[in-house]
Length: 220
Image 1 (cartoon, rainbow, N blue to C red):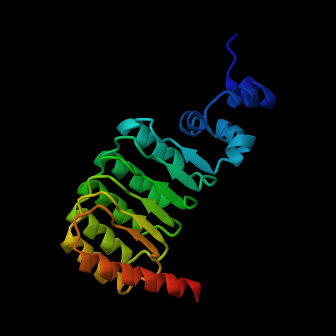
Image 2 (tube, rainbow, N blue to C red):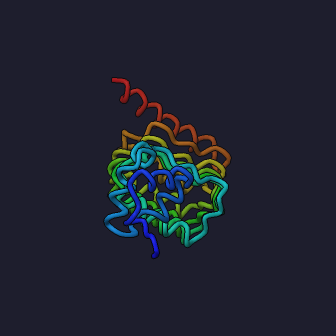
């Protein structure tokens, strides 16, 4: 006789889940069947899982797709770390689905990946519809002027994002000036890191002035 999960007592299934990683539970054990979803949803570790750190995992395109599918309906995770994964534009496309549909993630860390302008466009388009993400870290990717301009356009519509880290990319004055123009009207962004890009001092100074204005407004 073959024993399936459906035949096991709840306490036995919980013991099996105790030996699984958070990623395995989220990726491989959700959406198997409605009954198993109910089991996972009631599992104590899943209920209190608020931070998922998958840095240095090389999750790849397939992993990013599975992760996106799993997180679309997740309502516990608020912080997602995906740094140092060599994630590229295709991965960013999958993750944009998370930004568009997830309603609990407030911090998304994508530092030290390989996301370029095409990937950032997917993320920027999703930001137009997101109402919860507060911090987005894109430090040390491959974002150029076109990608930065897409993010600037998104900031015309998104009034939730407060911190955007674009340090160590390939952004030049023309894109930074576009961001500056957007900041004339966006008053919610209070941190914008553009260090180690190719910017003139006067452009950086103007952006810093606008960010400081937003910080003052935040305190009032």
